Amino acid sequence: MSLLELKDVSKIYGPLKALDKVSLTVEEGEWVAIMGPSGSGKSTMMNIISCLDTPTEGQVLLDGVDIAKENSKRLTEIRRDKIGLIFQQFHLVNYLTALENVMVAQYYHSMPDEAEAMEALEMVGLKDRAKHLPAQLSGGEQQRVCIARALTNHPEIMLADEPTGNLDEANENIVLDLFRQLHKAGTTLIVVTHDPEVADVAGRTIILEHGKIKKEVINSKEK
Image (cartoon, rainbow, N blue to C red; front, side, top):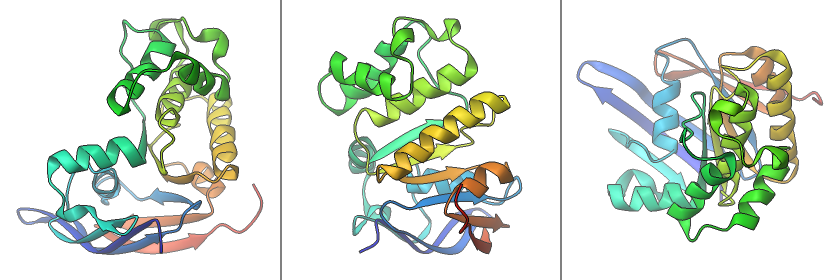
């Protein structure tokens, strides 16, 4: 059974079809990039997969469960228990330290565990910056805190929306190296990006246009 499957998924806003009968399968441990111009449906697809929104039509199977049929309370539970989210804008709490920002995610999942949160920061190379506030961290460091925050609850699937969009080349490479490590460890990754170089690191690239899958590219070379 596939980890994630979209079957004829549409999202309709009045006369606009943000997604138009999209079908997609993602296997456990796969790394998929999603690309496309503005308005192609990338963010809509990501919101549906991450349980932040529901489709107008179609099925979205996560671990065999059709999340398109679940209510908002159940979607919150699924997102909490199965999904790690990484955003372009970081969404860190500015008056909490890096360590405390990671522990916030634990609070919503179970009980905060400082040792586990510190371990997540160590995984992204920020153990020595644990007591720093977001304003005291570079953009690349803030993004790595976001990755640590997403990791702390051991998600089955990691979703990243333009995770390198606000980063310079050096920090982009650091983040991509972290994604390589996560992929090697078996984490399923879905990354929305506008950057062909970022997409090329994934195993497969899905290109959206006007709410439909225009093309699918298998990136077979070693990265």
